[in-house]
Image 1 (tube, helix red, strand yellow):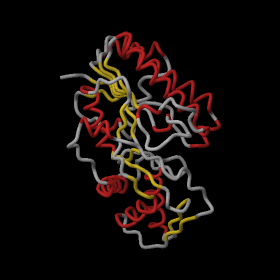
Image 2 (cartoon, one colour; image 1 turned 90 degrees about the vertical axis):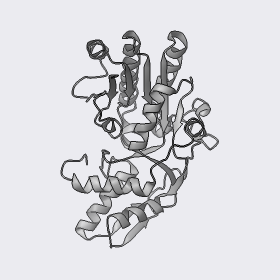
Image 3 (cartoon, rainbow, N blue to C red; image 1 turned 180 degrees about the vertical axis):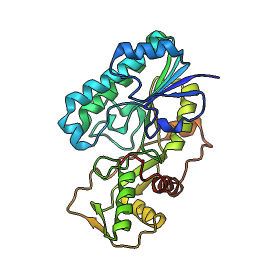
Length: 303
């Protein structure tokens, strides 16, 4: 049996890798910012592959106020994992990027060859440039050392093990938590913006399956986008959450609050060409499973 290291092993994506072949690493166990600690971890365990999900992440305010920290820590984490994997003769590695690596001004849909065509959005440019550096390091190592290292670019991931913080969470878990509180307190459900912006969402369990395939089968130098390429409005998502959670109160779309970017569509042609029969989890079924977990584990989930 192969032994695969999963960094960020208890986060949204990492927590999906539950079988015995996966060694899920927590930040408390090893500080990935420190090279010698990463070297010790990898030399001691003799991993066959690495799925690198870990990173310093945060909301818009944190990304804008602590740009130095976000750049330095993410560069160090990525550099240490990739370099230590090379030194320890690990042949297969998958590193997670983000759609924020794409230029702010770019022609849609997003495709893998557009990452470096211009500067990213100013609100999270330090984080985005750190992720771009990981892409360059992986491409360079693949060329020089003939290693099967590659990057994936997922669209908006959601799933049971997310952070449900209303202030700092992603849009779907934040909406779920808001709806829960509105239902329990019998208050209106207030939604930032008009509800019209479009987003692409992908279930964490689908990401897990696709990442396993990428680890062993994808050999191109370019990253690969992991998305459904199916857009849905925030308002439609709210309707689904309200139905699943049996919320009967008023819903208020606060148009005085910003909508953010209206849409950021991606092209998943590459993964579909490789896996034409892959069946993505529908947004409704994924939300249903996520909400069931949220309600069952409310007292212990990240929020």
